Image (cartoon, rainbow, N blue to C red; front, top):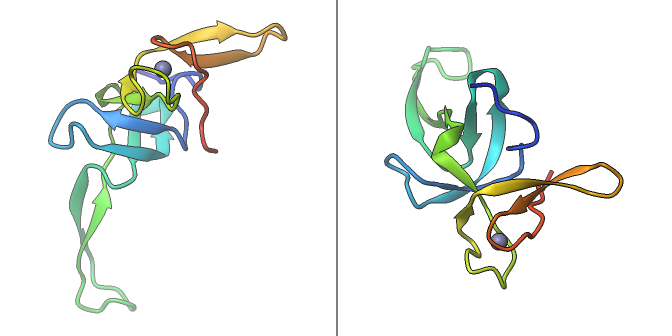
Amino acid sequence: MVISDMYIRKGDFVKIISGDDAGKTGKIKSVLRQKGKIVVEGINFVLKHLKPSKENPKGGRIQIEASMDASNALLICQNKSCKKYNNGVRIRMKFLEDKKKVRTCVSCGYELISTE
Ligand SMILES: [Zn+2]
């Protein structure tokens, strides 16, 4: 599923809702829109094997964050008076007077803003 720019963006804070990292939160590092996937800082680490190179003649292994399905994450509401504060929430699109679209928390109506 292709992800719309309206729903999830780089810099968004999300809560992971399924898989080994369920319950953790993190910031989105990148969005692979065509694949419907996201990469979240500190979530879903996998070991990557490196081929020997000039800098690293023996090769080795490093931990990197692997992409995951965007449906495994929910945006976090940052409105302190929301009953879902700091939790994953469903979002709703809202049209402003100037026809700009914003994402709001279904629970409290607070606008969800990306950090980037
Ligand atoms: Zn809220």
